[in-house]
Image 1 (cartoon, one colour):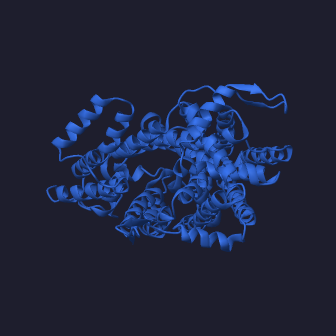
Image 2: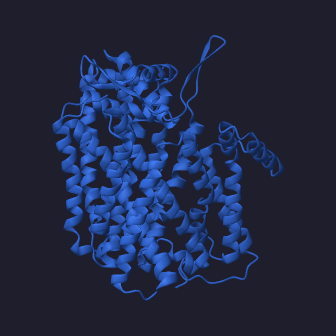
Length: 575
């Protein structure tokens, strides 16, 4: 396990205290619904931009990007190259609509365009997705800390959930914005320090490391590889893979910057539309060089852990960490004993044997996400370990706090004020906002605790189901903006048929999951169903949201020609 000294604890405790103090500082300015949800619409663009960036870069990205480039290459970096195109569309088409209406709910326009069903459809799936998102981010934030430093995972999850909920509850969106800005600085400092320490630990320095990485195809943007065929060498540059990732990224980023409540609500906190535009460009474009930094860290980790003087020891240690994690997820309870020579608690002989047996079967692709945390625990000096751990917490907590505040805002705007008490007073509205923050913080923390006992396949199938049922959100917005003739029937059929198509595209994933759970009857039933509607889909998973969105817009366009034409004044809102 890694080392975590008294100095590291001081750094980490100072970070947590700082986040709570920010919430307390903005308590008085967040005691009205407008202050809690929109910061009185007075924030500068640079601050909102840093908050957008911090929300975008979760702890998943902080750990997963180095893991991706450690295992493979820079293909996932193509995801970032589509961001400017999605940002331009969001700034040009989506932002003016949101700023014109002034509503802090991203989904209010859907009601004005198509009726209350559209608003409820989008907000319901957003709210349920946020519970899952908070749970996943919190769990993946605590897991490497638990395995590396021996911390109790449930305790880490609970402390993170309580701390983030408290400062979001107290300070509202103001606390979220300023905490995000500070967390951005912390995570950037941590990443730069990691890169420097990495370069110092590689024999020959960063130039030698880059050359070694080039030789092994680590900087390729596609599915690069070398294949021997009848004595010849053939190269696959993966241009089709680059296109697939780019299209998927464009669709996903358009959903983030165009319709995600966490982002749209921040647009409304800016003091004018010009500052809002700056914030979107800053938040989007800053992500590109920072993600490149994380991919470079992963590439250098590959070099260090495969050529360094201690690479055999390091790789074996990471494999044992992952094996320990997998045993816990499979329901095996770790057992311990006391090492009489050191007086420290260690794994019992039988449990250690299980770890070693499982770790011997693991490859690089199984350990990628755990290499960076292991490097932090083993290679960084005291104090810097605490700073890097604080950076990982910062990346996660910024995402969680944004989800909490945006979820509470939707509970108030899309449900309480819309269906329960339209004329609720500010005091009553604040009680709803406080309750929403606490309840969603509680649900998200419970979801993270549940994930301790779930396998990775269970997590994958949850996100698959979320993608199926929530896949119509972007399509619904695009129908509202692009298909001017579209009315209720066009939107409903477009979303229904598009969602059904997404379900059909994802049937192979569902079949594989049921097979892993030994539910062969369900797998056979899905395969029978797929054959009746056109066969089992063979599309790349990244193309599913792209095709699903296109189908929704095309269906709505065709059906709209058979509807009575209706004038829509600004292309989106009928007001």
